[in-house]
Image (cartoon, rainbow, N blue to C red; front, top):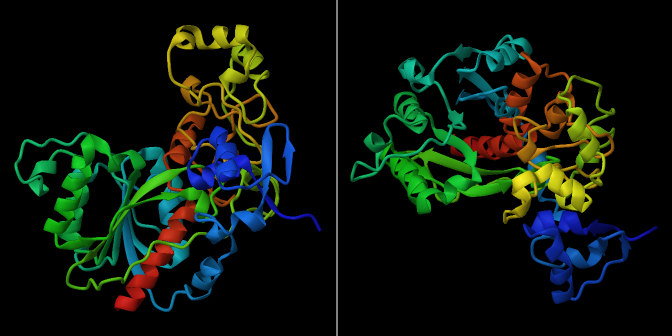
Length: 409
């Protein structure tokens, strides 16, 4: 039986380094590839698992957590900025019963109601919602508030200083509902935004509201059964009157990495190949250029003449612009999905066919179940899926929070 290996692109994803640096890293750590296909080295798993960062591949912690994560009682949740239900679905799988979900986008609300008629979907601007009626009825309040610019006109950088932002509305809901636990997710760039002052303000507000914030972490979705290189900043806070040191741990990593093939073909994630569906199309001229991009490649892999034709003035500017004219690879996790797979800055081209990913392919990469039916136009559906929290990531986080609540109850 041939020895198990990991490809250089997967190693790059695990370590958070560029593909081009993997060979240098391997030489430094005295690891040689078992074999090479084209420019991609495949390194022996038996050597990798002895190194820091790869231990999870042979750990049974995920499965031990899974065996002990069966709901033993009922906990409630509520969500702001719910979108098309990625996080809500994950939390539901983890055992939470939703008291309400608030969302302003009409199509996203239609998606939620269509798939879960029993969910209490409150459609409308969060600024005009009265949350006081839910006081002490919610164990977990979650939400991925849009990261608006923060004003530091105030001196304390507290609750009043964030007025006018959507985080203020999240904080207002916390104040009025008084949930036991808060879960907030955002882009990883929030951690460093404005030299860390934005996150510091958020932390101050959370403390001011009476909650202890666990040290925020950036979670890579690839570690949680998601075939996508998505990274999100996760904030978990517990009401100070019930907080106990060490009561919360971020989810353990799944012992394996899933790729685009796992998302679109029958296997461990889905029991059938992805079904046909609607999707955007490339204009004829763009399609003629994109067909020359190899699997896993981007604009720099085009002949020089086509590079100049496609990039125009950008050809002479600095920077890699690695998202442009990008074709995905079967054997890597997908790039982070955006709201428009045919947009020039962020193409997400099918690995074999010269076309953008379809909406069903998008949904699978975000680990939505096949039976989840999105409502609205094709462009609205792309937006709903592209903005969602991957369902499996939401489940992993929800499972950890559920375990904590059970221990604290």
